[in-house]
Image (cartoon, rainbow, N blue to C red; front, side, top):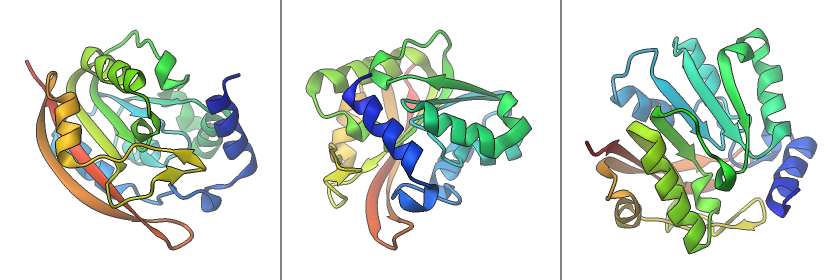
Length: 203
């Protein structure tokens, strides 16, 4: 087991949603971006680093039928499955480090809130960009800590981004649609500043 996987398995085995900073009752900004694409309910959506995020719950409740959740932590995915009960059968679950992910499908929407910014070396970042460019046929929603956000998360170093930095990384395969800053209030009542950007695949 890699150090990264061991770290996240431990986090999800030992902490509840109210004990981790990224918990959101309603991931409204992510939902707003997904809604902005006006996609059919059959659209293939993948949530990268989805863990036990509630995004999948809301998408299912809205009638989306083709949802995939990927996370490095099996424990995180088990928590989400338990929470969803029978609805969990409607979701494709993938336990994988994003660095090892080799998708066999393509996706209309690739959503990543706070997984990408854990990649801190140039090769990993380049590999991720290549992976997204290959796997996405429609849209990309990327959310990372901004330059005004934390420099670490869960004890790990992260890479901060601004709008120009994100656009420069993805511009070869994608056209930027919109970016916005978002203050996330954690369960501990601290504030983390994120940047959210949406992109459309270049034809």
